[in-house]
Length: 478
Image (tube, rainbow, N blue to C red):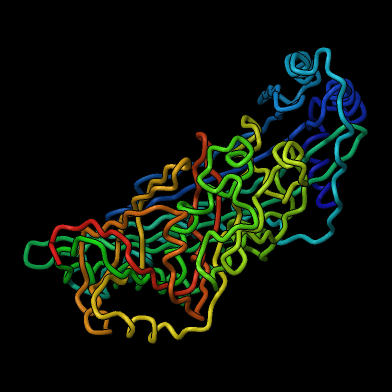
């Protein structure tokens, strides 16, 4: 199984845990449960922020602990502690046992094995001296300022973590995983004639810092942040009203993630609180629209060799040629819906229960040239980057803020606009897709998804899309 030897060294060598005794406590705690596990976690994380020409903040944190879960039907008992000791585990076992009292557990589905790791296990935090990290950020700062005299402020940061997990189930069944994660962010503020605008760009993945030390890598991030800021200097008030909207490739897939992805998570559909509940095998999108959740892409931010319940990650087809095919499942919701887990059981840390969450969610490419898509629009909006967004799972209604967008006039993207918001409904927006580009891109590796107070790293992506009749909230009419 994946990374068992390495995680054994962390959790059982020189700690308050003795493996055979731990497995015995887990067996006793879960004997009458339908499912459950002991989740062990060790994590190191750091961030360095360089702002206005100097280090503004630096942090380093180490955390470890366990979470013990017992599941009886749809009731969950969960206890966690930051202390790896037999005494703490026994107290946790007594707590979670409350949900299994008088319950006769079903036979839990065993884990499928996996020998394919999707990323390396090197610790990025220890590979680079602190002075080199600061030096990189200082170099980015100097480079961005030298690129254009209108640059007034530069902020650059690197964030990294190294997480080791091991999952133990009834009968001593065990799997482990080691997960690196890094991210580089650059933001730039420019000023011209008293007007100030900003732009930002980030890159990341389950890799080490090494590739970000290459000048072609960090210079691209700085150039993109500056380019977006300069575009926004020229922006005019966004049009308002219902119009054709063309979404650019890559990061605009965040709209797909929020407006459609959450509604296809198993818990919302089992409880029938999703706008997509009960619609399996029915048409929910235009022909040509295929959406997948794929946690098996090497080195991607949202990828997982195994999920946080120990299930190998998979590629799950959610919508195929417009037809709803399936949902993203963890073990509990999959079992209660008569399905298996799709490897989407995720949690923020040992202190949190797992639930169905996305990994890398994206739309597959179509056959249209992106230029052809823009040329097909007489009047509309071309949105290439988004900031924040909100969605109501029960009806799929969403609001998204554009951070880079342009008017489309007579088949050409023309003036950049500021203040555009996209307003619509997830189930509705997919039926209004009329053209799908051949230029699928995944985001640069910066996504974090929030659900029920838990944040986890995710990926998004899509090709260029034409959507007919989306409401744009702006400040100018027409």
